[in-house]
Image (cartoon, rainbow, N blue to C red; front, side, top):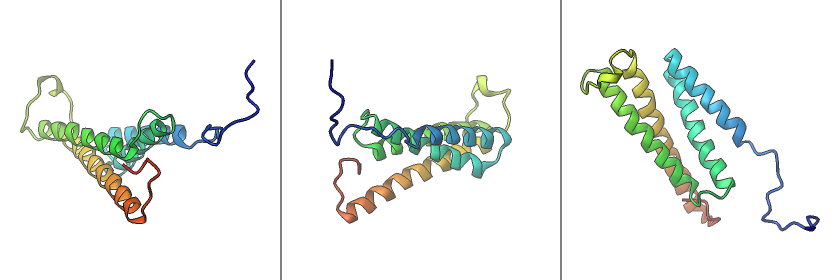
Length: 139
């Protein structure tokens, strides 16, 4: 039998991590904002979702640089949002999306959320660099 009475400081015993709740709230907020066409709610939901996914993956040691991961998530939001906005304005016709309406504002919400996510990751990274933190998670 294994002795689990001694745990090192690196063992994660805190079961009350906020990430699962924040992932759920981010998904709900983004869906409500996109479906009801409330751009600020969609943007906040998408930013919370991207940050939470980066946080949960960092806690699970799947990514070494959660801020870089969040920035890539934001770049994906910008790309998909730009395509949807271009289709919604008629600039880029995409046949399977023809029956859908309101894609311009939904695409704009994705673009804004992506820019905010990228900017937030950059801001956090620069603030950590100013303070001289080197905990291995600043990128």
